[in-house]
Length: 405
Image (tube, rainbow, N blue to C red; front, top):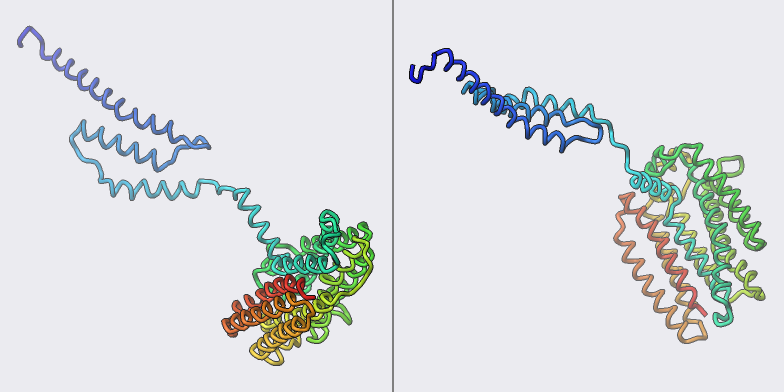
């Protein structure tokens, strides 16, 4: 051999050269895997299984190919055999993420909104504010601070009692609501019976307690009367559950709402402002108009609920006459209400009040007629939407009555 090197020496040197090359290539291939593992180390101290397997697969594939010049199994086969299996196992191993706090609060508020029937609540606020303003004879002689305090004194106990009224009605109608309104919290199971009873009982005690503490006797007794009427309307006890009868249901609901949402705030504000009790023309007009509105509300609410009311044995007007006749009877009553308002406005001795009352109520009658003709009487969702729209018409009317003189 040249240079005097033996064959055994050359063979040993060649072996060490290949071994050194192998170790160097292994370190080169393993370094990205180490760096990636550090970067992707998750919160639980565990690296994604599928990623580790895939990285190790690439490493051994490159390494073995370089050494032997051979071939490994294809990527498709490898991923089908190992990677997919690892991914499916990893999906089961990961713990379920807890629901975000904001999402939990949002769901809770939405459930309470459905339980509280806020569409009627906003109408209640507008009614109370309108009647409180009717008690003011001259705005220039009234302190805004005193009026605001008086209105809040009315609002707090009555809002609490409003929660009792809608709550006790849902407690009494759980089985009916499972058919007619399965989305309500009690019917859907979002609220347990125990939690609903706690809310309703607390509302009743807090409502009466706050009204008594505030010391307004007219408001307290109006609250007692309206609450008793609505309890008799809802509760399934002997001689009660008046909602089974169309006449008793209409009288109790219309009387309770008129007393609680119109007469009570008027008398309370007179007491707060220490003004002599008088009954202006606008108050008489308000009582007549809103009584007709509440009569319509009492009849219209039963139109989408025929199926559940039949199952419960209720004898509503919608069951007797059918939804179409009752619907157009309600529209006729509302149009008659606007007709009365136009006549009252035309008889007003004040020119601006006469013009405003006649024109605005004529416009509202046209809007009502257009809205009524867009209702699909065969669709309960369309009927329910119109029922909720009646509260919008009522809220607008609460504003318009302030200009009747």
